[in-house]
Image 1: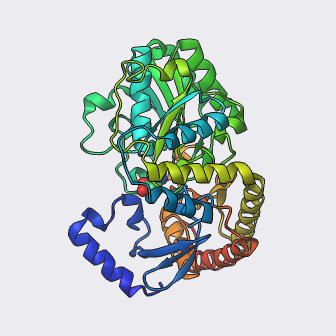
Image 2 (image 1 turned 180 degrees about the horizontal axis):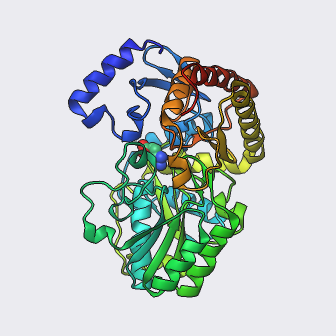
Length: 435
Ligand code: HOZ
């Protein structure tokens, strides 16, 4: 492993004052061992740590940085907003502009409320769904992660799965008992659940392309079944597009699949790297939110001027440049190169991918749900991960996360990642291959 003495010292110092030394557990390298590089700056597709190492960044802040770091339009928008004031707690035209961009672009959204994170968006969407339907039960899928909302921190993906607390202490059983956990991509289980409890279900929430058990695309038939059953039983379908929104296509996964959810949660890209979330949907549902309706939800910093400025700039650049076919081409090339490198080394891997979201699963079997993701060889992943890092390729530090490409990545960056992957797979093989 490459030496990073300054990062190591910074991590030790951080641990004195911050639980585990990090402000979100996904960052702490708990699943892969070792200690994280502390980041000094980013530019385009690259990150530099405080030890002076440069990495090609395939994390992109876990999704938001689709334009790369410090995109000139985003930086200019932030500078302009900064000079006018950082928070007013009063309406601004920028909030309306960001809402308008979202409504114009995401097929199912007629009205949208801005909040401060994906977690907040999901929490609020659930309350709205329950307030609107007058029902309590929520259906979620094992391995999907919807932020750290109590009622959804059950069989959750992302760091909850990575660090072995898919159902966290502190979540009251009374809250969790209204959550039904079903198997992702299994339409029969959903039919069976609706047959038993359909009249009590307020909403089904799903990542249409799961990114938090690694990248596992939803099957068309599965997502269509969710749409049909929720409509039949009067429940709401919530697409959690915090990751996939403005990532897989301008209109998100719902545009790709041609399925219209009732509510959509967004985050990440719509804040251009600043803390933002949003939930939106049919006006008739959204108008149940206070002060138009009675479902309470509020936030001092919601629609913050800096966050809206970065979000507007990012969405405008995406609309003008439409980078999605290029992202698809580059991502396909990366997947093909990595697959060939794995085969050469005799390491059987399965690559889950949709557009610019991708995961290299260390298993010979297809991954379609949490059971198959959980069967991966995480020790082999950890060896691969550290070799990639040593060769200057920064990947998510867990088998159960997605890597992201940005419009700033070049073909050379893809070639460099494939070359590093050859070394990574050789290292896995040298350590005895996969178990
Ligand atoms: N998969 C997570 C976000 N959706 C990773 C980031 C985090 O939890 O800090």
